[in-house]
Amino acid sequence: MPDDVRARQRTGTGLGLLLALVLGAVLLTALPKDDDRPDSGDCIPYSVGSWSTDDRLTSEFARYGDDATRADDWTGGDGTHSVRLPDGRVLWLFSDTYLGQVYAPPNPVGESFAWRDTTAPLVRNSAVLMRDGRLESTLPAPLFPDPGPNQWRWPVAATVEPRSPGSDEQVVRVLLWVRTAGAAPWIYGMPTATEVATLSLPDLRVESITTVFDQRLVPDASRRVQFGTTIVEEGGWTYVFGGDDGQAASRPVSSAYVARVAVGRLHEPAAWQFWNGSEWTSAAHPARVLGDERKRTGVGSAFSVVRKDGTYVLFTMAAGTAGLTTVTSYWACSPTGPWHGPTKDFVAALPDGEVAAYNPQIQLAVSGGASGEGSGEGRLVLSYDVNWLEPNAAAAQLNRNVSLYRPRFVTLTLKRTG
Image (cartoon, rainbow, N blue to C red; front, side, top):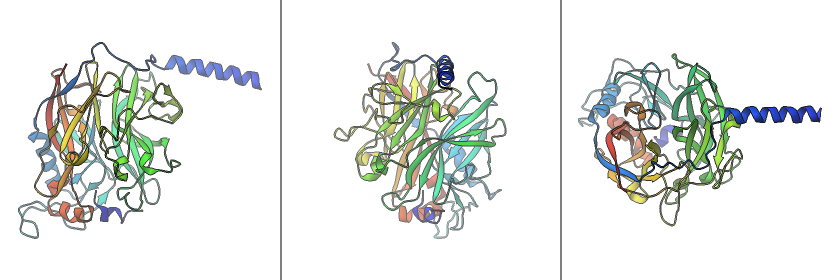
């Protein structure tokens, strides 16, 4: 997410009571069973059992990114998320994305890296389609236009759900983070709002974008919460996890939060409920479910949650300097916690140079499991993004070696630890 490139962006009372009662009854009958803390008898501790690099997926993004037959497609990006579509295709979503031409090595300084020149366009988001394990095309980018001057949209988690509860028609819902340009420490923008975009099927046309959680009035930007870093569907609910930007304000960790929405209503702001520490409420005052600065437990700027049997497992970069290279995990019997951990870590493979790993995401679309679940054997595909550590040098380094700004993949298994 190059800083110098970002800097160039456009930085009758009775009748009313009766109606209210009727509407309330309708809403209650439309909601799934209300389990405040849906603990499961199947819940047991899980941690990472084994892991290995997934060279096939990593190489596929390298092949597609290096393909020089088109100049308007994806050549690199971060913020990697995916969703499997009803026809079997996989939609990959990215935040800041390079388009343009990639040139074969050697690069201008004689190194054996594929490279792009400094005129390569950077857009705030993109979407790439995969069929049968092969990336095919990039949708016109950016897919989600800027909401206003000096603002942009980053897509995060996505799901396929009924257009409305009970409908036979399906759509894609994409969670979006709105960021606003700001001075240091907000070189990657200040968190502003969470939105939901609705995409038609099968043509993936953006039909609407709705704000579901506005944080502009929260004075401390490091305490603003954006939802959608990961979602889990269970029992008729879509659990939507989010985080704050505590690390941007030099706190050792960020905190995690959770909301829920009945399946089919993700795009309806009034349908959102937030965990306030003791109950689900429509009041938009979520309480942290994971994050203790004194104990240095918490999450990175982005994290992922998957449900295995009756257990929720959360993957995040570790706290402190280990968070530049190391993925760790927590587990819980409920999306609201309590979360236990961190448990076993693993170190992500990184290219040479002053680089860091971030945004570990379980990619269920290519893991072989249903939404919110891993495969029956516990096999999961996890991606992580790579970027240059020094923002002022990032643009030059990412153009010098295009492989630096592409997702890497690992395959891992979960094991019982209790």
